[in-house]
Image 1: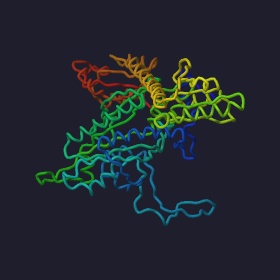
Image 2: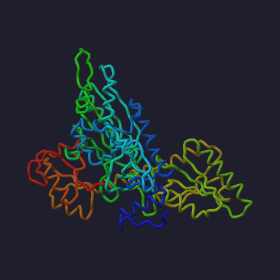
Image 3: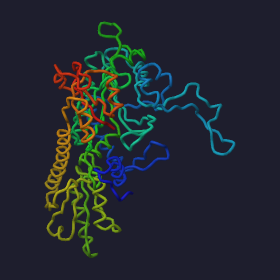
Image 4: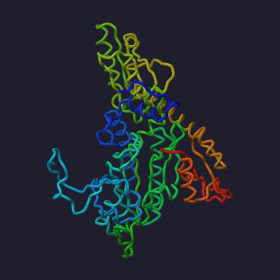
Length: 495
């Protein structure tokens, strides 16, 4: 595990990789662009997954699972969809290997598939094939299904958690009787994502609509939540798509309405992935290492017992186990009782792994029935009385964790506020982008050619048209073309 962490100000990209290595979140894989998520990293994903899964079920969704392999012909049925994913698809052409003459193995020519299979880059096509079997009447609607799965998109340039050839995610796919119901569902799930990002990851986001050029392949509209990382770059943290009737048409999915007439179904899809782990890392961590919001920290409190004499060990450990019992259930707590590691090394390790609250316990603390606390977010160490009432002590610790969570959200919100810049000209955007990247709010005349030109020139893209603010573009001129503005847009560099 790397011991040195490059300062953020020197090389933000290397800092990100160093934090991941120091926190022991992943390991390299023999497959290019894929990562092995180690237990500490996977536990962060589990916390994200469990929280979101609860939210989905509270909004009426149920989980199912669909195949990893998709017939190649399915992707050809929706032209825009196949065009959007064609360059990223992994293709299975054979179902058996044989021994090669020079040693090793090779595909058996006699085992070539009649139709190649695509390793799913997303599941709209196979799910809508199944929906065509399941939906017959308006009584079958709405159909609200979510899937937790892995997908493969053959990325050329990869970055751990943020962009990998294989990643973990959830994808919701819903079917509705009317356009209004489907639009409302897409917007509702965007709100679920935004609330989750703020409440659980302590990441404030901008909700908006993607431009046509940035829209999901096959969607009529793509809604997005955009988060700002510490270096001012944007990260698309989640998307929700109104698919219209495109997939219903492609897979002939109709329902009989209350009047007995056949209609095409309306659709949505929405998803977030393991890139949320990367978002949390880049939003909150510092030059010492990983900083995690308590709500997703695998270990929220670590207890480090300290003793000098052997006769002190049993008493200190017994006290720590008592504190651990008081905090469970409700707090994810760990007692680091390793004899072979010195206390200082333990502090260093747990700090780098992002544990929100560290507690030290020595003989004097036992005598006082207290613990000595240090927040990962900094500040002076302080004592916390344990007492005999376990419920009261646990409540105090939860208050500490809630305060850390709120502190992280406030810092991220301040960053988003201070680095969101109203910009009136393209020259001003380029100058500001070079000196202090951020979210650039501009009046914009929708033009795909101009959008592409800006991306080529300075690598800034339209992150979204922010919801609830489009009236601000009325009567203004486009910051790039000078033509009457059609939108208020946010441009930024993005991961």
